[in-house]
Structures are given as C-alpha cells and as structure tokens.
Image 1 (cartoon, rainbow, N blue to C red):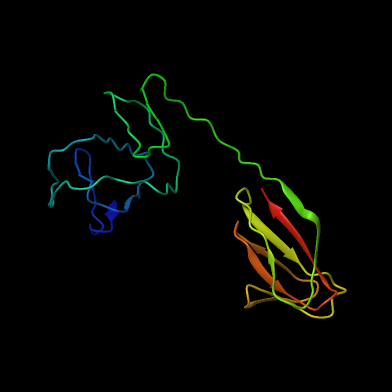
Image 2: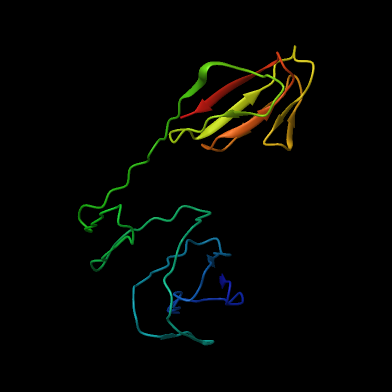
Length: 183
C-alpha cells in the first residue's frame, strides 16, 4: 500500500512503478506477512502507474523512517550533492559508509552557580556556546522569581530554557537563583 499527501491510499503490486517526486510525504506499508522489496531509481521521465498518471516536479525529502530501511544493492552510480556551502560532500558508491554520531554535552554552573537577586530586573548574559540554560530557585527563598517578565519559578522549582540568548530575572532583594548551562 502506498499513500502520500497528494495520493489517496493505493494498493501497489509487483511491477508497478510510481513517481514520488511530487510528494512531500510518502508512506509505504506492507500488509502481508511476506517481506516486500521496493526498488527505486532517479529519473526525469514521467511514469505511469496502472491507476493514474503521476508527473515529476520536486525532489523527495525523507524526514522520518518508522522502520529501518536497508539498501541491499546499488545497480548504477548515484550522484549526491548537498546544497550547503558549509558542507563539501562527495559520495562514491564504493566508499559510502555510515557511522553513528554521539553528541555529548557538558553541564556546568555559570560563574559560581549562584545569581544574587536585588529586587530589580537583572540580566543573565547569553553565550554562543550554550545549548540550554537551567534556573533553579532554592527552597529557602520566600518569593517566586520572574523570568523574562512572564514565567514564574516558585521556591524549590526549576526552569530549563533552550536558549543561548540573554534572559531577564527579577526576584526579592537578597534571595538567589542557581544558574547552570549545557554546552
């Protein structure tokens, strides 16, 4: 069964050919117990299916694979190009390999980890290397802390913020906020 954003669910059979270049989303489902094999090719020629005509105009972008897909055989060379000036990529069929990338982050206090409040609106500076900012109000504070003028953190509470920009905090004079970041 094949389904997409512009194609109603359609049963496909052995030998059917479908041009998927105009689809933003594409779902292939195997409702049978036997394994199914899907072959693909890159082509600029309109292709006819048994049920309807499909034309070619856009590229296919795969953003989610719900079940693993394995390429068993590449019959012809496939040229790949990434439209990004920062990445220079060349792919040969003979040298293509995939290795998982593990991204590790460091969690650390900013300065001494304690930000002194003075009763006014204060800034916690931004940082280009920061992935996230963590604010925690100590249990012994007597009043909540206002973040960015609208978020409230009660004593004993915390707030993770996915930002590397400067933020504002306001709290009772003499109380504190614990501040840390993920880099």
